[in-house]
Image (tube, rainbow, N blue to C red; front, top):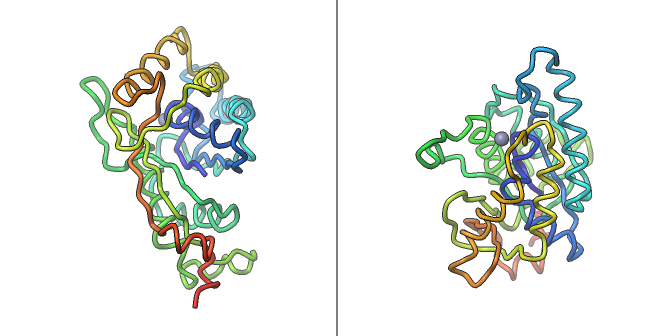
Amino acid sequence: MAIVAHPDDIEFSCSGTLALWARAGARVSLVLCTSGDVGIAREDITRQEAAALREAEAQAAAEIIGATEIRFLREPDGSLQATLDLRRKLVREIRRFRPEVVITGDPTVVWAGDNYINHPDHRAASLAAIEAVFPAAGQPHVFEELAAEGLVAYKVRKVYVTNWSAGEVFICIDDTIECKIAALQAHKSQMGNWDVAKNIREWAAARGKDHGMNFAEGYKVVSLESDEDWAKYKGNVFGRS
Ligand SMILES: [Zn+2]
């Protein structure tokens, strides 16, 4: 399950990895906190129209990635906050889909290179995601009201934190780089004259070059459950003695 702020965040950060995992048979859920409704700066388009357009683009990209599903939480774009309400919504998604791995951004990143400030929505979505993963999703008495929806506590095994500049774990996306490029190109309203194929190849090549890969995506990986515990319980906290 990937949890991000906007349509296209997944495609930029981790779509090569998700496509790879989907091809290997993994179920993949894409959770978008906002529908990018302020992301089209044109006077002739309303926020509602922009959201509808961007959801359609995200849906097309999800199909290219091979995702099982895409979920739109429809929080306000440009004003996203890591509230308790958002945490509850994300816990609902996690308890429903029961992902082994959650991929999200790094909420501590403020400065990104010399010419970009990380969008506050990115930090909010990432913070809400990790607060939902741990400990909330796995605690039976947190958000107990979700039990009425048949959703019980569930422990995510690993968090993959997308990393723009470095990373510690590198996933080779040689086999899915074209898929990543095509998924980004599906976000037509965002790409303008930007040369997607050239730039994405350069970024992914820079990450892969020291690791024997033509193209890579980089992550920090946090393991919350040991391999042994996961094999025994598969995240089901009620199954434990
Ligand atoms: Zn974004």
